Amino acid sequence: MLSPRRKAALIAGAVFLVLGGVAIHASPMSAQVLEERLQSAADDALYAMRADEWARVEMNGQSATLSGLAPSRQARDSALQAVATASWAGGVVAGGVTEMVDQTRLPGEAESFALRLDLTGGRMHLVGLIPDAETGERLADLAREQSSGRVDVHFRLAPGAAPAGWEPMVTEVIRALGQLDAGAGLVTRDRAALTGLAPSSAAARDVRRQFLDAPAGFQSAALVRADGESYQAELTDAGLCELLIRGALGRRPIAFAPGRNGLTADSRAALRRAGEVYAACVGAGDLIIAVRADEPGDEGAGLALMRGEAAADAMAEAGVERTHFLAEAAPLGAQDALQFRLTPRPDPEPMTAELEEEQG
Image (cartoon, rainbow, N blue to C red):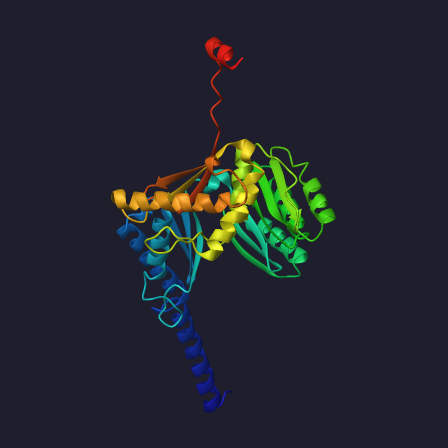
């Protein structure tokens, strides 16, 4: 027979278990109720800004995952902010969202399936789309091996978008970067381009040789040189050349003085490096440099055009004839602040018989 004290202890224990179960499963702050409340608030926030037409949010506890094809970067950023602050200001104590996972895509990203890889100061940076988390882990592990563990990874998932041969191509780029002092590689659905500085002429030749045989369905090129040397290549593929130019520009955006067309020193140096790459691609066509307008109207377009001319001047300092560059003003709402694209030169008109006679 239990003593009164023991009976009281058992009763208290049973009450504690019941109250604990109620707190976990039925109280306003229980895990399930909290997740349901956050899901409802996030859905309402997307509906209020009409982002529910393209975005989907899924709650896992207090972690929110946003997915969908965003119409623009601004729309994506606004949706992420709306979900993060849909219930209180976020955070553990307030009972709001504690983590935002961005799995959205932007127009064109899934089509190109772009991944950028940079090696600067002995550190490797990987940014872009991957088909699944397992592939991302394999690529990140390889990058750690090639850079002594110094890696920054910013992947976003795009399930099913990678073509066959994409992972072997990316793997080759990572291994090539590991042999350089500095460089950048870009991989899309059908092209891979690498540019950089090798520790020696022999290392540069080895890396260039690796890119001679790309996986089926891919075209690849490596513009790699040792210090004091020039690029040993002449390229005519416009797509590869555009990737190489973007790689040579580096990770930082090109910056102009506010309201003016003057370039910062870092931006001028980056454009000159890109000009050195374009020197190997002159045969692919003239280079159009389009700068996005900061203000509407003729004044904004005029400043954008002058900035494009300034960027062209900086690239021409690498030794390319200035006539190969064309500046344009991109609209105010353009996705990228600075765009580079190659355009084929028109074929020369055939000589007439009279002109042949004059020159003969």
